[in-house]
Amino acid sequence: MAKHGKRYRKVSELVDRQKHYDPAEAVKLVKETGSTKFDETVEFHCRLGVDSRHADQQVRGAVVLPHGTGKSVRILAFAKGAKADEAKAAGADYVGADELAEKIQNENWFEFDVIVATPDMMGVVGRLGRLLGPKGLMPNPKTGTVTMEIAKAIEEAKAGKIEYRLDKSNIIHCPIGKCSFTEEQLLENFETLMDAIVKARPAAAKGRYVRSCTIAASMGPGIKVQLAAK
Image 1 (cartoon, rainbow, N blue to C red):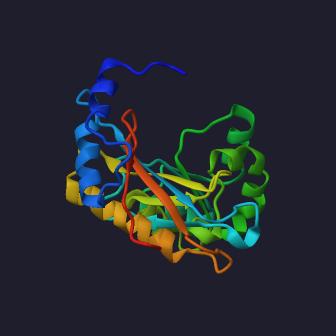
Image 2 (cartoon, rainbow, N blue to C red; image 1 turned 90 degrees about the horizontal axis):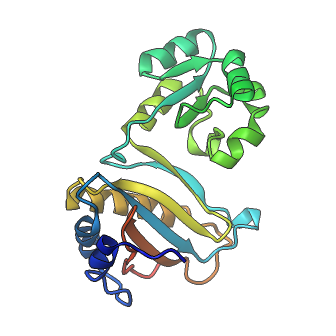
């Protein structure tokens, strides 16, 4: 295991690894453990009491964080005709159809962070599944990225809409802002995401749903968050 540097060891001393901090305390602490050299992302990790191998226990969705993620988002829109014009007007960085699909396939082009598509384009997008799926880029009606309301989808993505989904260990990993955000902004983003996850509880989930939650600056120590019973 790699040894941590002097700075990491120093900020780790600020965190009691055994303690579960109140959410407001946790965001205050995450700001203190962030680097002064660059603006670190604040990461959210939440373990759920479900089994993602079962279709009826999947947890997946999207939520607009009130203060965004602090990251500018590059959007690729698959659309034609009037919908392509609408996407351009809404601020999509790239708009097109088959030619963009070929660029991704042939040139391994991934200069974008989010894909939105109109339903009629899913025949084209579907062929990219094995390239987009592993990167978490495949548009999906459940998260509002396959829609006829393409302008709305683009505006929400630009405003700080994030997708959340379980990994194979039944953990959700998401960014909830930057260390430069105020404590109030980080706390509001945290609570908005947590509320969305709680509301997405599958009917098949048994027992305690939210098992644990940790937040951390991208290069800082994990801070356990005390949660109300969910």
